[in-house]
Image (cartoon, rainbow, N blue to C red; front, side, top):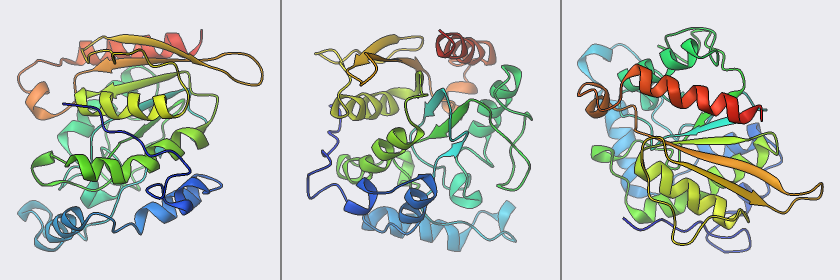
Length: 255
């Protein structure tokens, strides 16, 4: 699948309010009001209205989902999109579904999270040194956003990475779509992404540099199989495999 290009900041396709967001709260405020993709808006709201039987008494978030975690993170984890009955319900990335259970348990084991579970946005979970985000912020039907939907949402990931700042040393891409979207964003931001683009693979490692006022900035992109049940139930991705990637991310972030 070809990578989705990220519109440059001076393009009409890049919303000015995203480009000019002065901080993460301002970016999140714009994001959560976004209705740019009619198919995604209709789906996320349908799911929030109909609800799953197990959550019939809960009020669903039903809006785009912001990134979550340490605003000064050295490590950023990039997934795919909110789950229909996970983050689309709770309003927080990877919260309230089995993919998140798998991810946050690993973050706890590797020292990035204060607790191993995440069930609701107010459950006390704190991430330290790490942030989770996604290239698509609304739950897509069948977990498959279209290329146009990915393109419209791309500026949010780009601006979030800019606002988290120069402290980011490692970006972990969960799955091929997260990998492609992340490399596209970094390419547009001036990182020396190789041509042709490196193929996704679990454990893949791509060191990048770009010019910065104080000398070359450095960032390493790591690949990891997505934490979806399709991978974890079949043991294509095991807890030990995810722990290894997160420990590698921590080591690189300190280098």
